[in-house]
Length: 55
Image 1: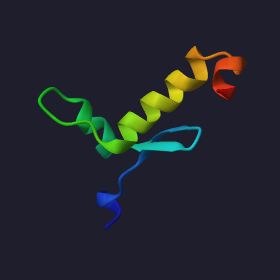
Image 2: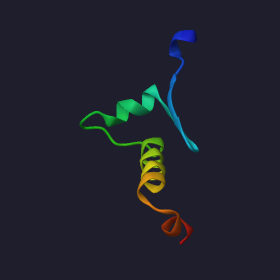
Image 3: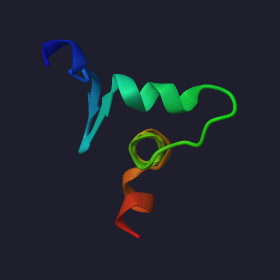
Image 4: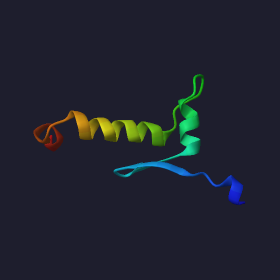
């Protein structure tokens, strides 16, 4: 059904987050793999310099 479509809210590198993924950010819920993947990919891209990325 058209109303049941899980809309894409963010695309970063190889990670795509959907509205349902954002629900895992609420208190008392477990993070899902896509949220963790996004966090790690974002930190890798923003925190490491090129030399560190090659290791």
